[in-house]
Image 1: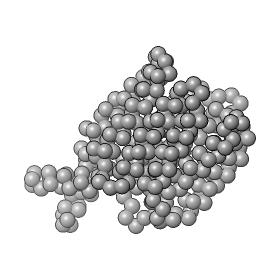
Image 2: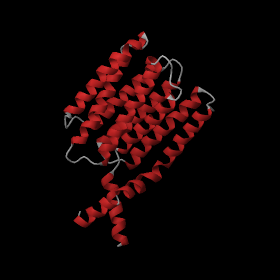
Image 3: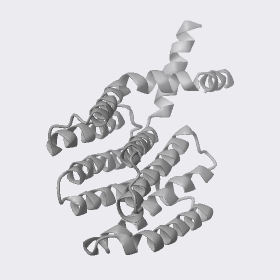
Length: 247
């Protein structure tokens, strides 16, 4: 790639992202808006109805990863993580299926961890994530029901590991916007789970908008992780080819 081609890519990076992903992402955007419309209007007819609308945006993100993701192991690990997340969404809406939902999300985080990889180490990120585990476990675990005393700490450890590995990638010498998208997605995902957990078990009076905050950060987090799998080089090449024909 010549210097002029590189400069063109840098100048149109935003357009590359929008043109390469936005058309495919429109169904995800529509499904997400539909979920929030039903959520705000309290129009869910049953738990299955809510499960379907809650899972649909995540399944559409998984489809985006398949269609627009870079051809690599990373793409398929993220895809499996998204599918498992949809399974977790289904269980969490159903009565008395919280443990199954937590297990599905825990497995999703394992796939995300392996997608993010274990190099570079990211010592500062590891320390920060470890500190989060200690603080959250100290305040939250004593409040959870007895049947979740093992599952919740295990889940906290898994999501903290996912956060560590996503942040550690930012110190890579070739880090690009996909690395930042994955890290932002992980941060939002953790924020979503912390909002849900503390509102459910820690706060004496529940926050009236906690579920809305949980879902906004959750969908944002999953979107960031999905974007981290995008084929940035392929999209850039197509845009450069288009600009070359135009010139």
